[in-house]
Length: 70
Image 1 (spheres, rainbow, N blue to C red):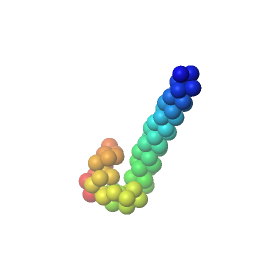
Image 2: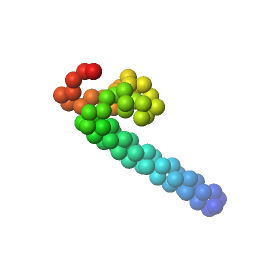
Image 3: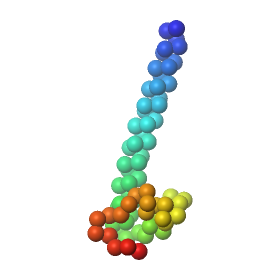
Image 4: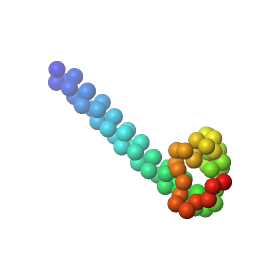
């Protein structure tokens, strides 16, 4: 039973680590999308970079404050 608990504990530790990495990646992605928008890139080009439509990129990442509609 000790070995089983050890494996379970290691597996959960890996799940927690992967979830943390995913959260960090999401924060970085949002930051870089905001930077790209601030540098004048359109939702269309951001969508192309992410392999999604302009609408999907805009819906996922929202708009920067004071940004005009395209």
